[in-house]
Length: 410
Image 1 (tube, helix red, strand yellow):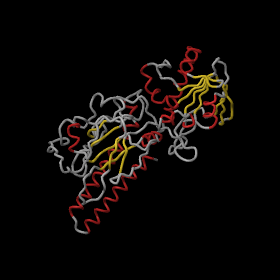
Image 2 (cartoon, rainbow, N blue to C red):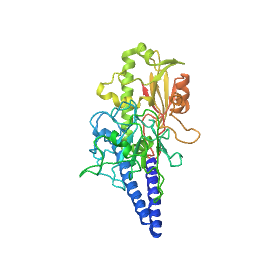
Image 3 (cartoon, rainbow, N blue to C red):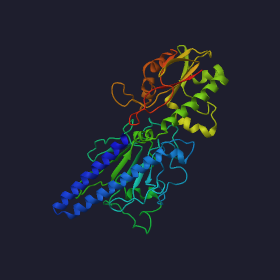
Image 4 (tube, helix red, strand yellow):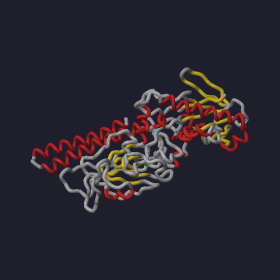
């Protein structure tokens, strides 16, 4: 859904540019016509790059087993079209360089002026070093603005993009670009050294906070102090695309299964001492966030996938180990009796009176932003009763899967 909106925005810009080119040609303005066509070629290249980034993110686990989905490549820093070996900065910081077109399986994309594309990725989504958490609530880092400083729409929980692709356009006054090489992009083998010669702004290479990026106005034939064209993607673009995979629901459900099995084993072996460390007594229950995979005793090679999603999970346990918790099911109607329950919040509700926001630390501390009905209430009060589906499912792949999943640990 959000992927379609992003493609529609680029298509709309492309249509405006082509129509403008036709009007300019009719008026005999050949220079402006040529610029309009260059804009159109840039937008086509940007659309290709954006689509490839989404494809990379939603197939990451297939290329890197055990690491999960949603990661984006580090930029090309050496002007060879590939993501470099090793890290691109510290954990949590943004990285910027050229688009790694070889890594993405793309041809050598160029904008309408023959320049290679540039690319920035947020610290919350880059593949090396990986963030500690990556799921449908992960924040973005890039604020997209129009030339008049209005915010552009980004499909993300916080309205910020996790990746931006740049078509740098022709050199502006003060920019000196090395001549083109026989093969590959112009410029040196150092993206940081070349950055100011290609992009309009001096973007920080290791930003930890929000970064503002301005989209140039599409006015062919008119001189401008900025000419970068951009395409971007937000967290929702990636996870809405993942939801379209036929195996996505089973993948998430298997994560919940592994977490539930590990939690059950820890409750068996650790007893009240382990519970006292990882949960707080609330009402008649001990309640806490799912502990880190290491604390659950999960083998090292299997921890990453669980940790990426554990902020979506809370558990409640009967302190004395009896089966004091009831879990109600609707399909078919039944009641299970459990000594502990693992609750998985599902995707946030994005609109309406029940809208959920999980952006700020204060919002993420509110259980009502993750769970609905008696689940939110009783996780707050400690009442030993919950209700929800036993399995994660995506009944409508075009809509967020918001239903609470409740696993009963007998």
